[in-house]
Structures are given as C-alpha cells and as structure tokens.
Length: 253
Image (tube, rainbow, N blue to C red; front, top):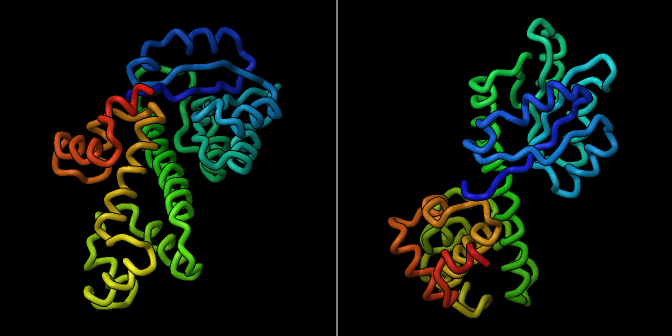
C-alpha cells in the first residue's frame, strides 16, 4: 500500500502511548498514529468522519471497557477496524472484545513483533473493507450516469455488478446471470444501455480503477492485480485509452 492508514489510540496512559508511538513498525507496515483520546464521543466522531481507519482500544480501570468502545465504533463506523489491548491475563476482556468485532487482541507490554502481526491482520481487513466501499460507490455512480430509462433493468444491472465484484465478467457470464442466451442478451443490452456489454464493462472497471488510484492507498500494480489484468502494461494501455491519462497521473492528482 502506498498511502498510510490512520490510527487512533483509545487510552489515557501517556507513558504507554509514547512508547507505542515511537515504534518503527507503524512506518514499515504503512500506518501512522494520528492521535489518542480517552473520550468515547471524540473517538466516535473521528471514526465517523474517516479520520481513523484503525482504532486500538486499551483496557484501563478508568476508561470505558474495550467491549463498549469497539461496539460503539462498529455501530457508527463499520469500516473502522478495531484492535483490543490489555492485560495478558484478562481472558474475559479478550473474549468480549472479539465478540463485538475486534480483529485481534494485543497483550501489554506491547512488543513490536506482536504489533506487527496485528497490523498485518488489520491491513488485510482494511484492504477488503475499503475496496468494497469504493466498488459500491463506483457501481452506484456509474449506473446512475448511464441514465437508463428502464428502471428495472438498471436495478438488475446494479445487482449484477455488485454480485460480480470478485470475478471478471464475460458477456457469456452476464447473459447467463440475466437468464438469456448470449446473442439475445447482446442485443437487449445494447438497446437498453446504448453500448455493447464489453465496452460497458471495460469502462466500468477503469472507472473503479480510477477511484482506487485517486484514493492514494494503492500502487498501480496493486490495482492492476486487484482487477485481474494480465499485466501492468496491459492495464496501463487500457487505462490510458479510456481516460486519456496514465494510471500514475491519476494516482498523483
């Protein structure tokens, strides 16, 4: 990942925070600590406004339980990934944190090795979560801009794209999904959308690629791999042919 994921620490222990902040693993794994808070309302506001992709909640007697913090964050900002931290012997806190959505539990004192393992898990979850959100936005915007007069067809097309996120859809696959033979589907699609399915789908994928690149979170080769292109060169050629810009130019905007 080329962009940095922002981290919010929920804690009121300055000594623990300072030690955590100085660890080199954040930079190595593509994260940066943007601050800390011991106020649950502030934590929720920062997560809701996308100021923190990762929250690490520490268990302290003077703080709300990690269970309460993670549960509240998960409700208002489902895309925020949460890690719980606390005593190695606090198995009940660990259990309750996992139940409400924590992806990992780090025991204190926190070691760089253990933190590194937790950040690897967080990276995997964040990549899937954020790319899914980007995909949904792209589907909604792309289908809406087509201004298809047949509302039911537009809705089915939206459903098709959402269900086909993790595959490369061919005309044959799309025809089968819609319940038609390939030839009839091809004519029907062009009459409804004004272009062939192949052209439509290629333009849609490049629109999705543009969103991923402009987010600053992905390198060009990562987007190429994510969309299933056979090579970065082929992806770049298709991208430039459709947008008039190279992927690197869009990424740097």
